[in-house]
Image 1: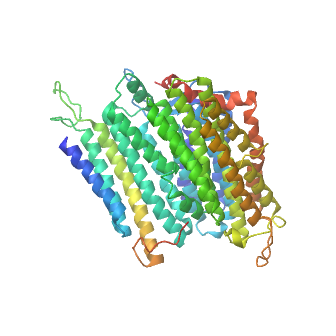
Image 2: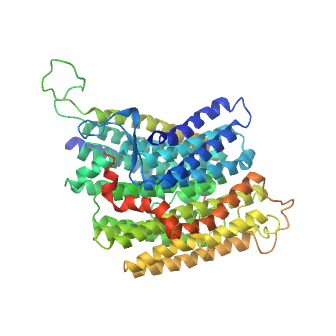
Image 3: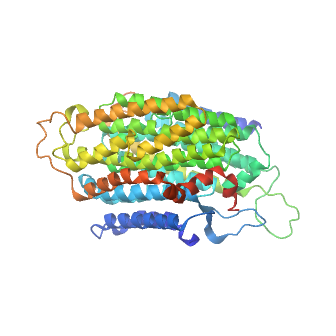
Length: 508
Length: 112
């Protein structure tokens, strides 16, 4: 099975280069190949999960074996956490790509769109798989450069401005990450994450390492749009074409932001209590401020973008509480529960935020309006869009029996058990605020008085409906992940990778 | 140590440019300056005093080599930097066509 690991990077990368060449001659090539590639990768990830991953699988690029315990090759590491992330990324990529088949007809350059889309997914898969710091930077740049171009895809005033802001802040983030990688290399003379982890454990713990941790938090925090690094997100995510917004909000900020943070901070660094406290504080801040900013928005996609900041805060808070407990040598079971909540919310957020952006795109596709004040009464004309959007809104604001309820519940229970009562209270209050602004969205867009100026309104085409229906079913279906038998099979390996640092070192 | 400090000052010069300049092109230049200060930093961490080029040939007993890995990383980073700069400048040209200005204060259709 190890031999199949590089396919996650090779296939999308190959598709990205084939599409501009062959897509020019064969009609429909670009749509078929992207859908097939992501469907295949999704099936492969599910196969890996069903097989069960107890210890990390590694693939050494170029087949360079380690010499005297010093790793030479670039490692691709597939463990519980990375297979879990790969599954989400390729699921959302497949559904967004399938949705785009009808949506993208209004733009001219379909080939370029699909090529950039595949390139972005190749970058994300690479970031998730790689076990080498500099390689992580390279794949991260592949993903973000493709996303810069995709945000500007409409080449209108707003898109260009959003892309420019995104590029300046994203460029600074990349430089901070590169700087931190340089500092780490200077200190340890190696780039392999597991190798650095062993060296740090052996006791080369110093001020430069702490400095590099802070620089990394700033760099990846900018990529993940944690407050106070969030300024670019509402512009970029609301200006991109809707399938891309759903990719950016659903998986990109998680794959290159949160995943990188938790992978490096759990598996590589020896964390001090202060750093864990900083991360948790940033998570709580973005949870609160993101939701407060979202209430006042009247643009559908901008509201959803601010809500992404708030929900990412939940994930960081869940993982951060786990990190806090681990640094104070507390009860490992509570830490595991808290991290489980964070990761569970991560997959749930990918599903329902992807769905919300797709349904916002469906509304925009048919009416051409994004302003909530001008919309209204769409529920009778667009039943699929309206009902799937309602399901996602209920799920994100934590109404049982949808998945969002269970993940928030787990995070809150873990916070109470760890005796962070204030955090639990804040999480509950923010959940109610979330409900408030999603009810606002539902009322103004889908219910209420219909706008008479919008004529000839009908449901969106099949491919768009299909993606939305699948995601709506997943919003209910993912609640099953809380059930003990399924939870052990899917989530436990991911949580164990983070709790047991020694597990990751097995790859050496 | 003084070289590292100068390198860090170069980084801050770039940061100053990005934060204070209002011209879109000058912001891009500021980012490039930051980028190149980092390339310099990478070249410095691979440098070993009186080291020679890391080519293994016979007849050099106990030779001191400079670290070749940061140089390889710098080459990769320069290529990536080229891509990001090209992308930024392409967007800057498009912005000029739409807004007829390079002034970042006048490019403000997105708010809230």
